[in-house]
Image 1 (cartoon, rainbow, N blue to C red):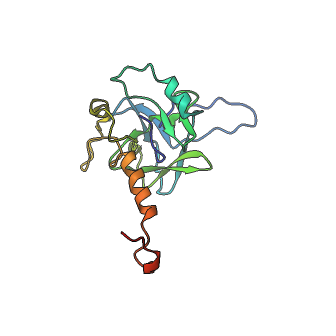
Image 2 (cartoon, one colour):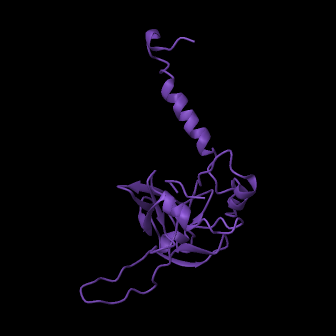
Image 3 (cartoon, rainbow, N blue to C red):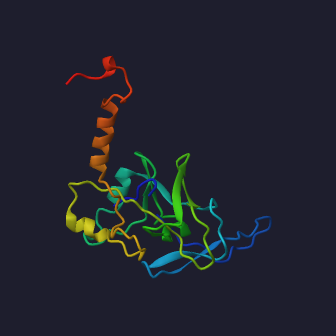
Length: 199
């Protein structure tokens, strides 16, 4: 299951190697064990709303290569670090990625993903306090014809009061595309009668 634009993570170095002329990077977060799942990313200092926290890095590959790379995964293992950038590119943070890959899903997120020039960034959408775990809504894409057993692998454990119980997007991709096609065919309500299609 690929993460949607909107839609993954990597280990970061706690101490930058010192080289002449290269400044030490002062990260506002660290990776450690998470109560939600595996490892998570936690603020080490106050992160104000609107802060660009980190870029989601990894191997930039085609969807076909992503499918081939993970086709041998066990049926009960839905875990990858794939992030869909657009119809051509996925970022596989399992290869050459950074700490962003460990940011867990949350149904009550304090971050969101932003795609700019085919790069993915994680921005703070609330004021984040030191020690708080970072999270964004994965909105994993799926289709109404997908196997329910496979979809159940994406159960959410974020613990938010309004948790929807899944990391999947609320509406399947095939229904979204159908709605978009219908919306394009339908004339605006204020269009002149001559522009409306006869039934």
